Length: 181
Image 1 (spheres, helix red, strand yellow):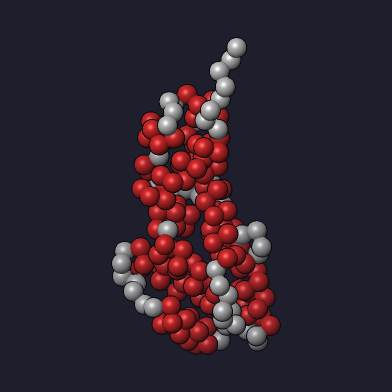
Image 2 (cartoon, rainbow, N blue to C red; image 1 turned 180 degrees about the horizontal axis):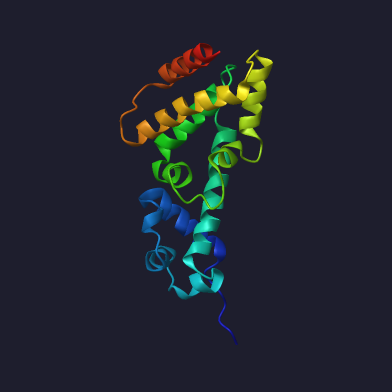
């Protein structure tokens, strides 16, 4: 009789997610992942043909985590791009290793930054439409201008160089939006 599989794909993916969240994706090797999951490397390679395949699935899992984070982030501001900016900066502050994997990595597994940000609910499209409804003549260019500021602030938070409060961040985002109009 064959042994019952005790380590599942979900177990391996969750262990890889936890390792990435705590130490960064570079720490995820077959051996370290097996140790974290409490198994040998055999179940990993029974489920995934190689570590690249696992990395791609983990990347998709982290995108889903970011999308859920954004969807659940309180939407308190009517100025376009402010809520998206706050959620993005907050995600970087609270999940720096996951942020680096998604937004500060050369390997995005064929996804553009826009694809990741737009998510399953069209977050960027909604913001662009909101800007258009609020009188912005070129909302796509507005997005790019705002995004340079937002991404810069998020990256600064990774190095400890961004220490503004949420209130100060909202004020800067609103002022930036108004100045770009």
